[in-house]
Length: 317
Image (cartoon, rainbow, N blue to C red; front, top):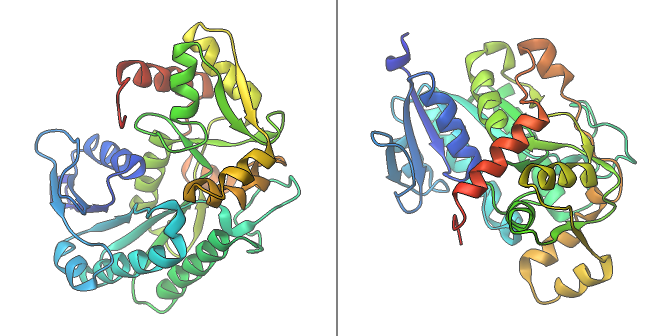
């Protein structure tokens, strides 16, 4: 099958969906993006259609003829338990009807606190948070669908995102824009703990690699990330790249909890604070040993990210 014969359907046009698009376009693949509006900032010639990922009848029609389907959906942060399982089921039904591979991006909430132990794919699901339990249940359902023969699935997991087009993350607009403006970056927890940050272009390439290899199916894969440093070191590198002196403002835990009483998103962050109070290290050796290390070196990733934010001062604002 030639590149032009393959048809790839991406549900979701957030940073991950667009990073997958970038990786596919670099290989001259046919790409169809799906979101609720039918609009997205994409290169000319890329198809974007309106669709509801939570409705199986819609996803079956959208996925007709697909070789690979990517689930890059992400509901509002405060609506995960209510909306996320339904979104996943809809995309799964579409991929199954098309007999396509289903490649899914996940985070690592299902593991829960590890006491600073590096996270490997064989860790038990010990989450005590509502979002972590939701993610664990969804992941179990995905693998069960694969094992039953309903659909061929591979799952890529990443840590906190950073990079081009990435705003609503801990290392997003609250760090990069202030660094460029000479203001204080916002942070949570103990900034002197190790914390893996996953680079969005690496995530996109990693998911495409999983789609290219049948040996990836039926398994969980931690996607390669740049070298892990402490949060302080990471932010310092960003400021060094901008030429401004580093300034970090760490929100006290009591303040985060107080804000959570009034702000739904901040309320959801409260239960995830453990991630920023202990070492949070993603072990990606399984992927690297199977498919090679595709991670972008951290200085290069930060340079590219700073330049993107510099050139897009009003993105999403």
